[in-house]
Length: 353
Image (cartoon, rainbow, N blue to C red; front, side, top):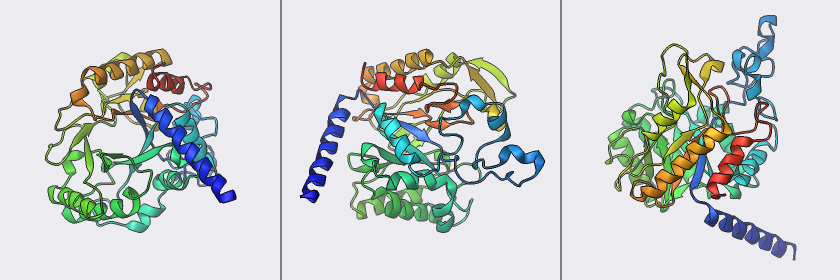
């Protein structure tokens, strides 16, 4: 009897989830940065580094001492037991359908280091999502963060990555797919290896998938990438710190919303960008309010409505980001946004309220 009741409850959860999904105007995801576990290197017990005591891997000094308004209600760390389940519920309750986790290659420019990949704090959040008791409420995918210090170089390395992804990630029942194809975004598409990506597609088909839906962040050949998207679009990146209005950031993103029937676009919007908290030198953007963000999101939905041939048929879109606390791209509630006003915007947009 107990087994029957559990089965019925599971069916009800699935039916309710499907009903909610059918009401959504778009299938919206959020990039998830997993730098809020592990240990900050400056946590060495010295008086000058007292700020770093107990801080996670990516908590820079300026973030925790000058930009304290960005701290979520659970603190700078998100690796406590049950925290992933809490974040899944928070995201799903507000209409977010999937997390796109940053995935990092180890060792840089070398062969695969599976032990490092499996045990690095940057992958802990995704691992916890995969094991979360409530992960049926969302899906997940990876953004291959193949940038400096995490570069996948050469055919053999791409083949090793392909085998790892297929065997360890794509077979998970909650992995995001388009027409049965696992969705993978590549941060630096120019470093993609033609033969390695061909191998990825072939091995995916051998594993029972119809192929891989591979998205380039920026521009990439349709022969290699069947989708295009962005992680974010930052005019003035690498230039000296200079204040600019949020409207300029919005305009830069809108210019990147384009696709073709052969290479549809997954449009991306951003909550903001101000990386001074981690010491990055670039322009920073002020004036991001829930009201301005809502206009931005409505603009994106309108673009998708009026350009159906340029987007995926399930209307995928993505936000940067769930928790880029040090870059100022933040959907989660914080001290500055204790009521979760940005998340409430997302819910109104997704459900057309």
